[in-house]
Image (cartoon, rainbow, N blue to C red):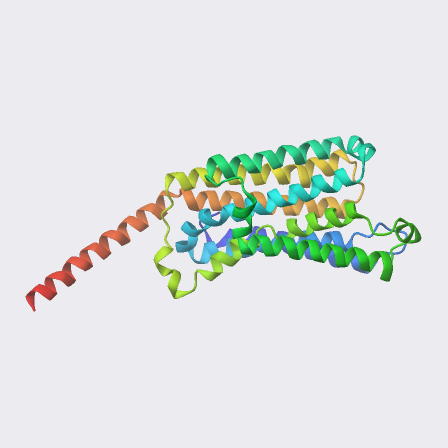
Length: 300
C-alpha cells in the first residue's frame, strides 16, 4: 500500500474521523461534561504535520534524503517536551510525584533515551548552546510556553471553567504542562518546514532518493523512540489511568495509528531498493549525457 496511490487513504480517513469527533464533541458538550473539545482539537492539530509530511514525501520522493538530516529537530522538540513535563510534576510537590510516579518514571526514561539518541546515534553534543542554535526549535518552544501562559491566564481569570479553577489561581505546573502539550502539537513542524523549503531552487543540490546507511540507522532509532513515546501517550497511559471518555480514546488511537502508518511509510521509502535503483539509473543516464556533452564540445 505504501507504494501505491492509496497511500494517503488511511491518513486522510483518520484525519477526517478525528475532525468529526472534535466537531461532534463541540456540538454535544454541556456544562456537566469534562471539557474535551480543546484536547480533541490539539490531537487533530498534531496529526496535520504527519499527513502533510506523508503527502509531500509521496508526491516528491526526491525529498526523502532531506528528512534524516532534520529528524534531530523533532528529537530536540520531544526532549524539551519531556523536560517541561518533568518540571511540571516537580513543581506540584512530592505527593503528586509519588501519585504520578509511573508518568514521571516514563518521562525521565524517555528524556534519557532522547539524549542518548542525540548523542550516540546523531553525534550531537549535550549543550544548551547547540539547542539554541536551532532557531526554529528554540522559537517553537518559546512560542509554546508563551501560548500556554496566555491560555492559562485566560481560563483562570477571563473565562474560568468553574469556581475551583479560579480559587486555585495560576499554577506554574499547569502552565508547564500546557506548554508541553503545545510542544507535542508542533513537534513535527520543523521537519515539515524543512521539507517544504526544499522547493527553493537553492536547495536542489541537496535533494535525492539515496539515503546513507548511517542515516537509515538514525531513522530507525528515531522511529523506535517516537513509537515508544506515543505507545505510552496514546495507548498505555490512557488505559492505565482508566480513561472513560470514549471520544478521547478514539482520538488517541487515531493519532497512534497515523503515526504507525507514517513510520511504516517512511521506513519503506528510506529502505526501498526501488528508489536506490532509480537513483542509480538516473545517475548513469546523467553520466552518459555528460560524456556525450563533453564529446560534442571536443568536436567543436
